Length: 279
Image 1 (cartoon, rainbow, N blue to C red):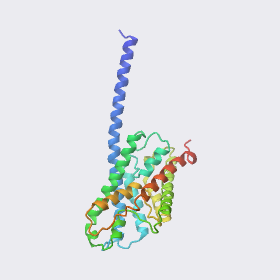
Image 2 (image 1 turned 90 degrees about the horizontal axis):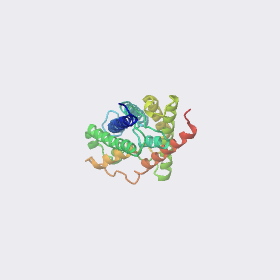
Image 3 (image 1 turned 120 degrees about the vertical axis):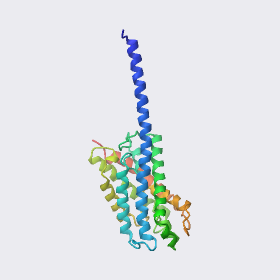
């Protein structure tokens, strides 16, 4: 005989099973997010730092290719990174991740579509920094002989991390804030065209073109890190790797391309609430 008591018990059991299943899916998706961000950000720095190595290190086929070649290479490095990191939404950048948090979004987007919370945010950031580090290590492997032949320590460091044309920490910080604000704010605007807060739904090519125009328009003063992971991960690789005659990793400047992009990304997230409302 079916009673109200038995129905309540069955309903509670089904609810508990649903919670357990949901929790397992979220945990599985968190792992997928981590791998996706490692892969995507690794591709980003492999191809981005790679184009700088091609231009800056002696005896390369692309030696002396110039700043425009670097900006084009970085733009398409972003394209590749976003494409392969579709499961996580292709953030590849702590400034983007923290901008999404600041915007008040419920989820981070991508195929995994994990909820925005403290744990998922840490997973994104960890994947981005690890991926950036690993990509830079692979660049060193690809150009090992050219690193050995290059006589200038500054050129070697420049293939890993950014540095200012004129060293003025305050103004360098302002430049990074502005460049990153443009990046994150316009990425959110791209998402608005699809009436979605999901950055992963944004086509990779427009984002690549955005990075290209930021590079050619705002990249001169600091080398447009606009991404804490892109700069700090490879800088750590430069510090650790046994690079012949590498010189200093310039830790005195290292905080600028981390703090500036974080501020710019968070400001863009807040600004999107006012200037890019979803209707």
